[in-house]
Amino acid sequence: MRLSLEGVSLAFDVPGGEKVRALDGVTLDLAGGVTGLMGQTGSGKTTLLEVMAGMVRPDEGALAVDGADALGGAGARRLSAAVGLVFQIPERQFFETTVEREVGFGLRARGVAEAEARARSAEALALMGLSLDELGGRSPLALSGGQQRRVAIASVLALRPELLLLDEPTAGLDPRSRSACVRAIRAATDAGATVVVASHDANVLAEAADRVVALECGRVTLDGPVRETLGDAALMRDRGLEPACAARAAAALRRAGLDVEGAPLTAGELAAAIARAREAGGAS
Ligand SMILES: Nc1ncnc2c1ncn2[C@@H]1O[C@H](COP(=O)(O)OP(=O)(O)OP(=O)(O)O)[C@@H](O)[C@H]1O
Ligand SMILES: [Mg+2]
Image (cartoon, rainbow, N blue to C red; front, top):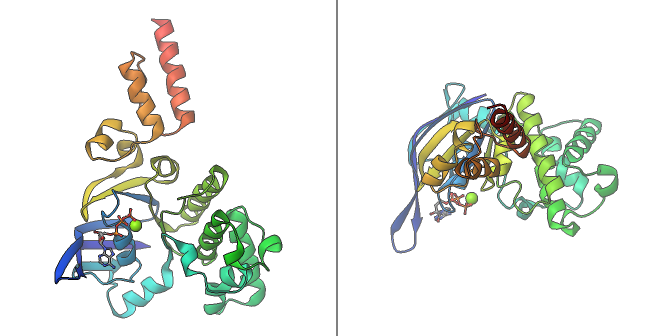
């Protein structure tokens, strides 16, 4: 699915008759792959995801799905059928009495038969490292914070949305759950979904994203392939953003005199780059 935003601007009314500009002329074209959305707190990430989900209407600009206007009519219906949004604090949205009903709610609402709804719920929970057999009968509110977060993500994954939007999905998750989330994001995009992940965690995006877009005061200030953004420590720092840990370490090694080449994004890539640099050093 192709989602296009053109010149999207939005300001919120605040008491006293003033306005807060949350988005300012955002133009983006998304078609497949995983886009990581970065930016300081208050830069407009959540607002942008809400506009992409068709939940909030921009004051100005256009939103299109596969070329059709998505701010009304058939395009808006197509968008609402295709989108799945994991909210920033998704466990606040729980309203069912059991985990099974919570995860299967959207499927049942869409008329998916009971057996298939259960199978898809079990699959989505397993992707997030949880078992429907173990937790299905429990109240979602009586789970740990990390379990709640994973149940909330699973309830959106179960819908297999063509457009998957996640707002800080790994905040507060332990390393294993975080890896499960990254794998689930990659699985969704491998299955053809267009994915957008808002995150402050450069290392999650280094693993999960193909492209990185950064916002500052509602404006896009950076948009490029993950390696050319998160892998470039100087560029990221220049924009007030965190680079991938491996990129920061590579820059430090270069300053210390080791000629590490390329733009490593992960510990494994950094280790390989160090090994190559040492071999080249030893050979000369
Ligand atoms: N409902 C609202 N009413 C008024 N102002 C709002 C509302 N929602 C967001 N804003 C303002 O819009 C701007 C963008 O907020 P948004 O929540 O999109 O930022 P964010 O990048 O998601 O931040 P964070 O990293 O803290 O989640 C901020 O200045 C915020 O105060
Ligand atoms: Mg936010």
